[in-house]
Image 1 (spheres, helix red, strand yellow):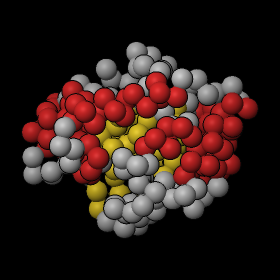
Image 2 (spheres, helix red, strand yellow):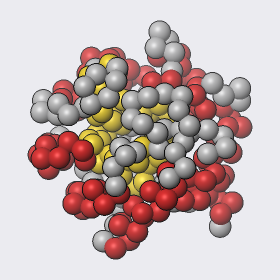
Image 3 (cartoon, rainbow, N blue to C red):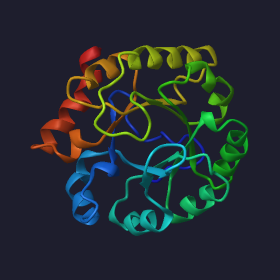
Image 4 (cartoon, one colour):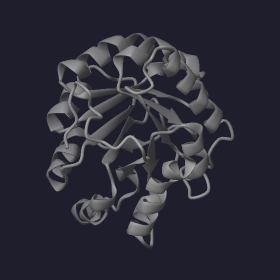
Length: 236
């Protein structure tokens, strides 16, 4: 179900959490097999992109995204953890990215980046680092489909969820509600996703959970995915 520019969430259930599988946690020597294994249990895939400047380390590049695009019909969500946005948006959109998220900390580059994403007929997201206040998102919310909130330091794996993560989700919910955008813009929780943290993130108002090891290292994918998808139903 490729995402598009208009109403990208049409066709997705609104009464449960969406599962986004983080390919950073997959076996990188076996992408085809890994994606085939988890594909029935995810709603989309998360592709982190970094160049060792904005965050530590190097992650993913356009040719790799193009090579995995045929392995799934689910959308590929590219999360740019980089300040070097010009040119990258076109490269990753051509490679098969359906949803592209940029960090609001990129400041003056953000408006042009979001315009470029829309020009490529892709869904647009805006991301916020853990150490940035929620109101930094406010100028961009009318132009995006997704608000991604980091619950751990960006670009670092294996770190516990910040105790402030749930409050930040609540703050973004309020910003969206003030603008009448809560039904249009989904909130995504990324980082620190563990079995004991997902219920609290759901309760706080997250719509999408980026699952890494919780998904790819699950002993029973059917049970894990069913549990995550049931959490919002349990709130009603």
